[in-house]
Length: 447
Image 1 (cartoon, rainbow, N blue to C red):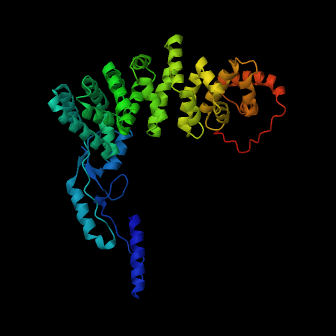
Image 2 (image 1 turned 135 degrees about the vertical axis):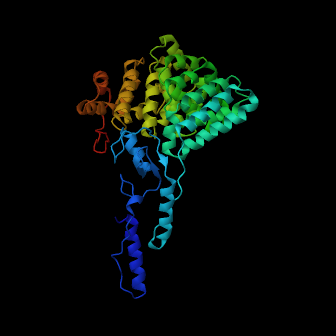
Image 3 (image 1 turned 120 degrees about the horizontal axis):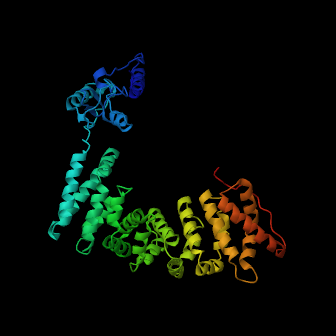
């Protein structure tokens, strides 16, 4: 079998022979010994491992086979009594020696692979983390070192990450975080490491979210959002988003913490990175659209966010935001426009109407749904006699876009709102001397 690097070697050898005036031997080939080849990929093994059946394979190939749900040996078809392959150091050393012998043919020696971590090793480290977190403060340095070890192993390879996640690392780290949060100022260093490690093992299971949803854990995360450095604020935002999801009880608990809303808005006003901005927007979206919260409580939350200038911030973000941020920002703005204060701020902000209309049929179906809902709330609740919002919506081309939206098709709920909007806007069209025609050739829409 000829490897890909053989062609390169033959080309180099032929060029050298031509320079020396010798006839080029372009037919030179190098055959890999059969016992050095993986029975699955038929390529030279880089990390040979042996199964319980005694057959040796390349680690990547056999792990792919097992992860696909196959519990038998590919060659013998026997059931595997153990799914943990054992490194075959003898074959690996023989392959390395063969590579060194064939160096003149352009073959590079395969590096000695790192042995992947096993579930037993992960369980041992997690057990020590649990013990250290429950011990006295003088042992917190040990806990921090163990968490760093878990982080290093998780980053080392994708296989290690799968093993770490499957061993329940998220729950153990979350339990340690909850235990140490009661005295956060004394345990800042280890809490920072745990937050950083938690971001590597997403998604978190229900048990982990339960630990992180405790009052002490939420207070600690808000504290990091307010006073941590950039990386810690980012990690706290990501873990908070993962913890809350759509759990209304945890959202209610977060809202009771002083400074929580201000810290989330700060992440948008002074962005750390796109990831933290998205996380903050997701948390606020669940807040303003929490159906389990009373209307009075929900309105109070919306009014607080409006007073912090969130409507203006979102309108400015939407001007040039990428797709994911745009969808989330529109979702939060749609929730805020459900309150009187939110609509009033939207009416008086010069960017709100134009940018919302612009996002229709330009970003995604979800963004279009949110945009139509925002316009529907603003136009239906227009309290001014002059109908200023309706006229402004017409002037920026909403009528034509809504017509096009109905022609292209959309969700039933969005269709109803668009139809109702067109009826309301049609009444005010006569007030405008002229509505410029729009050219839809450059209109982008994902089909």
